Image (cartoon, rainbow, N blue to C red):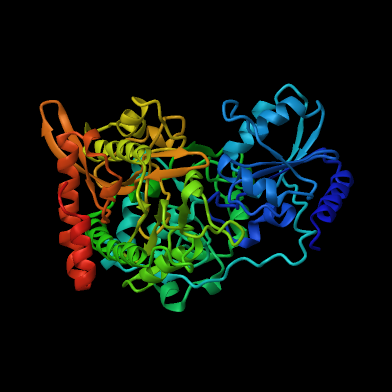
Length: 596
C-alpha cells in the first residue's frame, strides 16, 4: 500500500470501528530518543513526511501535521496532495498540537494514542490541557500495525564491548557506584529507558540506531540483579558470560512491561518521566513509590572521567586533521562543476573514515551554501542540492562517532570575497563564541545563567538566533546528550548546573533568511579553575581543533582579549594538527592560523 490518501482513508475506517474521535501519532519510539529505527517511523509511512520531528492529529475531517520551523518548506512539499495539512503557526504564537486540540476537540470525544511511544510527561500534559472537556483516553490504541503490512523489522545488530581503554571504568565499578547512590537515596529499583544510560552502565555499544552506536534495550537495576531486556541473539556468548558473572539477567525485550508489573508494591522505583512511556508507567504496581527524576547513570555519565577526557583530546586531533584536509581540498577545487553540498558531505565523511576508531557520522552532515545556511538544520537532498559556486558563504556542521569520543563542530567560510555585512555578522558571532569560551563562573552556575555571554554582542546590534547556545555531548553515545545545556532556561536541561568534566557545545549564530547563515561551533570542556574564599570557580577549555576563517573577521570589532584568544587558539590548532598533514597542507594551515 503506497498511496498516502488510501492509508488515511483506511485509518479513518479504523477510527470509526473503534469509536475513536481523535488519533495522535508522535515521531518517537519507546525510548523517546532523537534518532529512531525505521520500524517506528510511523509518520513517514503514513504521510510521506521524512523530517525527524513531527506530530500528527487525525479526525474524521482533519488530518494535520505539526513540525518545527526547520522543516516547514520540506513538509509543505512532501504533504502536497496527501490529504494532510501542515500547521504553520506564527513564530510569535508558538502553538503546538495540544493548543490546537484545546481549541478544536469537541467535549466528550475519545482520544486514541499508542502509550508505548508517548512519554508519561507528554501524556499528562495532554490530559491536563483537556481537563473539563469530558475527554476519554485509550492509551493502548495501535491502529498502524495492522495497516503497515511491509513494516521494517526491529534492528538486529550485535552488541560489542566498549573497552575500558576508551571509557576508563569497568562495568562492575559503574554498577557499584550506581547502587551506592541508590542505597543513599533509598531506591530499590531504577528503570532505565534511555538507551544511552544502559550503554554507558554496561560498557557496550551496538548499531541499532543511526548516528548513535547503541543497542535497543531496557533495563531495571535492582540491589542484586540487573534485568536487561534485549533480544538474546544480539548479545554474543562471551559478553553474555561476563554479564552472568555480574548477575545481569537477559530477558526478552517485549517483557519489560510485564516484569515491571510483578515488582513489589512495597518498594521504591526511580524513573525519568521524560523518557518513560505511559505504557511502562502504567505497568508499575499500584502503591509502589515512584520517584520521578533524572536517572543516576544520566547524571554520572555527563561528567567525563580522566581516561575519557584524555581520549577526547586525542580524537579531536584526528577529527581536526580530517576537517583540515577537507577545507584544504575544497579551496584547491573551488569552482569545479563537480562540487555540490551533497558531494562535499560525502567527501568529509570519507576523510573521517580514514581515521582510527571511526564508526560513522554523529548526525546528518549539514553542508549549506548561501541561502541554505539560513536554515539552521538544513539537510541537502537530491532536489535541493546546491552547486558550490565561486562566491558565497558556506556553512559546514558535522561530527563523528569514534570509539574514543564524539565530535560536533561547525565552521563557516567565505567562498570568494565576503561583503562587509557578512564580515560584521561573522565577527559578532565569533565574539559570542569567544566570550562563552573564556567564561569563568562559580560552581553551581546553570546553563541559562551563562547563555547571555554568547548573545551579548549580537543583542547589542539588534540581532539574535532562535536555538540554544550549547548542548551536552556524550562519549561514543549521543551527540546531543544532557542533562546539561546552555540556553534560554525554558527547558529543564538549561537549569542543570555545569560541572567540571562536562562536555558541551558553544555555537552562537546569525541567520539572514534567503541570504546566508553563520554559525561557529566548538566543543568546550568544563574544568575547575580555582577555589577562593567565595567558593570554587570553573572555566572552559576549547577542545575542538579547526581553523577559523580570518577572511570573515572584521578585526575592528574585536577587543584585544578576543584577538589574543584567536591567536592562541590558532597556535594550538597548528601545533597539534600540523604534524599529521602533508607539507603542502601544513603550509596552507600555517597561513590560515597566522596571527591577526
